[in-house]
Image 1 (spheres, one colour):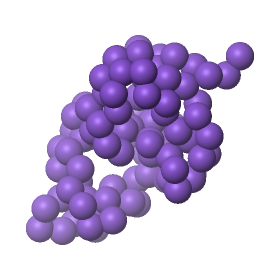
Image 2: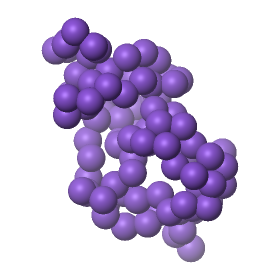
Image 3: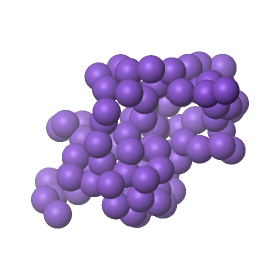
Image 4: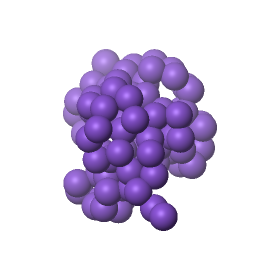
Length: 95
């Protein structure tokens, strides 16, 4: 995996499905640590399993969470940048 002076390249481990997206989808398991995404540092706070979502930036409780350029849910708690986004901190907008 490509590495820079500030961390591993997160772009090869994730996909962002829409420009408005507030989460990335992991294409492989991602370990905690320092990464770089589009030239900017991003600290992964916890292990992110393949197929799961990780917050690109901090998301406040009550804010919409976007994937596919569409809201997929509402944050049920504050979510730190680099944290797993899943049912423990996201109320699904899909009914």
